[in-house]
Length: 289
Ligand SMILES: Cc1ncc(COP(=O)(O)O)c(C=O)c1O
Image 1 (cartoon, rainbow, N blue to C red):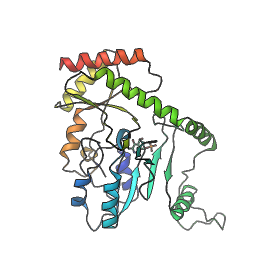
Image 2: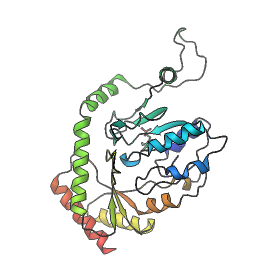
Image 3: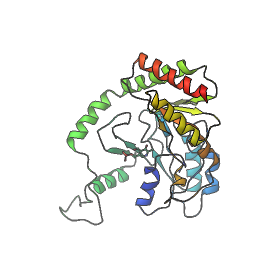
Image 4: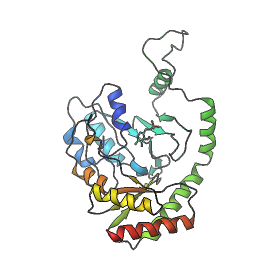
């Protein structure tokens, strides 16, 4: 898996008794760097787990080619990427399965919860069974293995259906938000916003601001100064290999971009006037550094 992700990516592997191995990322996409995957594969490797970070699709054609050749499964972490696509194909449909989050800050939400997508009928029915305490489909209250209560409530599902009806509208608004930021910050030197690799559709889950050449201390100072001027930000995720309970990794690109990155306010109620104000603060604080 890529070293740069929300820590749940690693925890999901630990939870099933696996060991997460961290790969460096491509600085353009912020997703797993396909050129660096194969050196990490051993006879114990079971799967490649790309993450479509901040809404940018990972390079799925390359990842699928490596997985096919090396006999590995592909599990896409699409928690942040509802609506992201390569060509006309949406993320979460490339690998053996895709996982989506419906947490409140995601592109569509059910408050809490998520879903798994797969074209594998056997896997789908196994997942349906596991989420319902692995109860035997033919013998009530009989359990051949340990399962879970991972069921979504009907109330949450109703909210999710209503959200899904609006997803095109939500995604268009996110894109407009990104364009609003990009147009206003065009002339600020030394910064980069989200990319969208040709052939890819970014769902722009979070507006990403990278200030080239700074370290995490300076990045945090910039965040504090912006906050004092009324603009809240979040730092990029820390490389997961830096967490005390996870394995170390040699991932210089992930470490560099993690230190340079901040997420700017990203929500659909932002107005043009809000964007003017936020971008003026970004400009003032970045230029002062
Ligand atoms: C990349 C990534 N993977 C997994 C998750 C976990 O999703 P959830 O909180 O819905 O379990 C998140 C966010 O919460 C995420 O950003």
